[in-house]
Length: 117
Length: 409
Image (tube, rainbow over all chains, first blue to last red; front, side):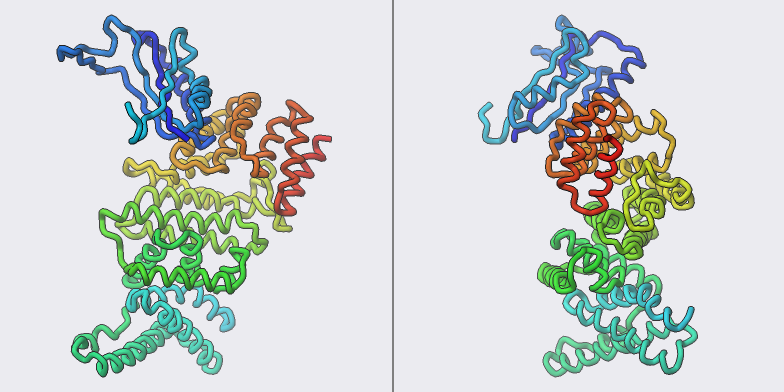
C-alpha cells in the first residue's frame, strides 16, 4: 500500500466565503476525512491558511498572498493510504472543495526513500 | 465486619500493598518471595485469628507480621551472604535496611512504581493485564482465569513468562524519568483501559467479577491522579471516560446477564452520581493543551449519557468520532462513527459509507448494515441481519439478531 497526497486546488483564492458557508464546508471536510479514517486509510492532514501568506519569486522578491497573476492556489492537502492511484482518486472525489466550479483535486503518490524523483 | 468476611476483605485491600512494598524492596529477582511472604502473612492471620479472634487493628497486625517475615527472610539471606561474600555486607545493611517501610507514602509510591514496571512494553498487553490483576489488584489466579475465559495453567504460565521477561530485561521498580514519563504513562493508560474493557465488554457471565475489573481499573487510574507527576490531562480524560461508561453498568445488563442495547436501556438505572464524577474529571482533563484519544472518547461517552436524541448530540458524536479515527482507528469506532453519521446526516449517506468499510468478518458490521437498510430496503436489511446471525458468536448476540429479523417480517 502506498501513500498519496490529495491536494486541494482552488481556482480562485480571492473568493471570500460567508462564515455560514465556511462552517458547512468545515463539517463536510471533517465528514469526508472521517470517512477515509473509518476505512483506516487516513495518514495525516494539513490545512493551509490564507491570511499572511507570502510568495517568494525567483528574483527573491516577496509578495503578499499566493495570488498574483495566477489566482489558483492550494487550500491544503491530506495524505491517505491506497492500493492504487485510482483508489486514491476515489477518495479525492468526496472532497467538498470539488463543489466549487473550477476547483480540482490533485492526486500524487508520495515518493519513498528509494524512489527516483 | 464479621470475622468470616474480614480476611477476604483485607486480602483484597492489603495484599497488593504488601506485595508492592516487598517487590520494591526485593526487586523483580525475588518477586515470588514477595508474593509468598504476602500470602504467608494472610495464612498466619487466618490461623491465628480463628483461635484468638481478630486483633483490634487488623491492618497494623498484618503489616507487623509481614515486616517480621521479611526480616527473617532478609536475615537468612544475610547469613548466607556473610559466609559466601562477607566483603559486600556492611553493618549498615543489617540494621535499617531490614526494616520494611509500610508507611502510607511508601505503599503508594511502591504501588505506582509497580504499575509502571508491570505495564512495560517488553511484555505483551494480556500479560500486563494479568500481572496487574495479580500484583496491583490482589486477584486470585482462578479469578484471572475466569476473567480471561481461560484456565489456571494458562494464566500461571503467562504470568511466569512475564515475570521472567521483566527479570531478563532488568526492569527496575521505579518512577520513569521526567523525559520518559509521557511515553510510559501511555502504556500504563492502555493497560488500565484494557482492564476496564475486559470487565465492561467481556463475555464472562460473572457480573460481580466484571464489575470488579472495572472498579479496579478506575482505582488504579485514581491513584495516578493523586500523584503530582502522573496527574496528567490524559489520565483525567481516561478516568472521566470510565466514569461515564460505568454510569450505565446497571442498565446495560438484564437479570439474565444479557446485554441491553443502548436504545432499550432503562434510563432510571443510569447512575447520575457517576456521570457527575465523569464531568468533574472531564473538566480536570481540559487543563493543558493535550488532546488524547481519551479526551475524544470521554467526549463521546459524555454525549451518550444524554438520552435525548437531538441533532446537536449526534453531530457532536460524529465529529468526535471523525477525529478519534484519525488518531486511533479501530473497527468498533468505525462502526459507531457510521451509526452517528446515519443519525446526523441520514441513512442514505451512511449506507454508502458503511458499504466502504468492508469489515466482512465482523458480525456487528452486518448488524449495522441491517439497521441502516431497515425502512429503506427490507430485502437487504434481512440479508444483512441473517449474515450477522450466521457469524454471531454468543447466544445473546444470536437472540438479538433473531429479534431484529422477527421485527422485520
